[in-house]
Amino acid sequence: MDGMIRLNSTRKYLILTEQSLQTAMAYRVRFFTTMVTGLIQVLSLYYIWRVVYLDQDSLSGYTLPEMVTYIFISYALRNLYSFDTERQISDNIRDGSVTMELIKPLNYQLARLFESFGNVIFEGILVGLIVLVVGFGMFRIQGPASLLNGLLFAVSLVLSILINFSLSYVVGLLSFSTTSIFGFINAKRFISNFLSGGLIPLAFFPDWLHTIARLLPFQAMVDAPSTIYLGQIESPQIANMLLGQLFWLIALWVTGYFMWNWASRKITIHGG
Image 1: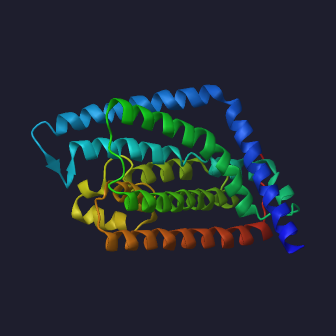
Image 2 (image 1 turned 180 degrees about the vertical axis):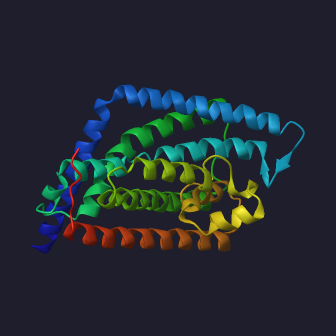
Image 3 (image 1 turned 90 degrees about the vertical axis):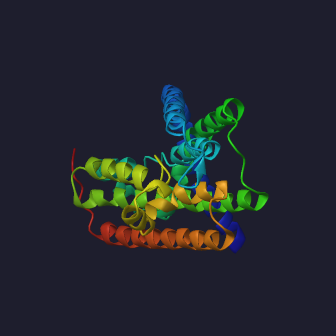
């Protein structure tokens, strides 16, 4: 009986993923523009780094082939994080539909997570795969440093997706205390793209900034899985990196849990 209840509960969450996927598929133009924009971005970075490496065999521990691989991998990772969770939560709060969530037999945090998987599957995975196919086919980007690195990369990837969702969820819940969330969203995306290693590897940062970046959750989103994939760090460091990702996942998830519990008791709808 308990097993059937859990199965039915899981199906309710999976329905949210299915609905979100159908919505994402309806916006095919956005999918196409995202893909084209992504290809232009990675190609631009590719040619910039080729110029940088003209007289260099290695920079900050990265050879040109490794840097090219990092460019494609980091873009694919960042594309997986196009959740739009913050805006959806903000819209729910502004139009009052968030009150309906209180009477649904679903955990609000888990519901938003499964809802975000639709975007991950359609935009993230499909666009990311297309970009990676171009990378492997035309630019001969490297595979994982080893089979073990590939497996640990997969673990790190899952953790990074959950960390990014958890951070987006926390930012979205700030809508309970402000009439406009877009400033927070833009700030989060800018800081995340930079301090995650999404633009350049953290190894290129000056020591003081590198230290700061390592203390924040952003590095767990792009730099961690990318460096594991490329074999830039040894096994003991990989273990510490994965534990660090797990720490940030738990910390951000628990923060979101308590923020929702507080906010759901003091809901104030900002009419729009």
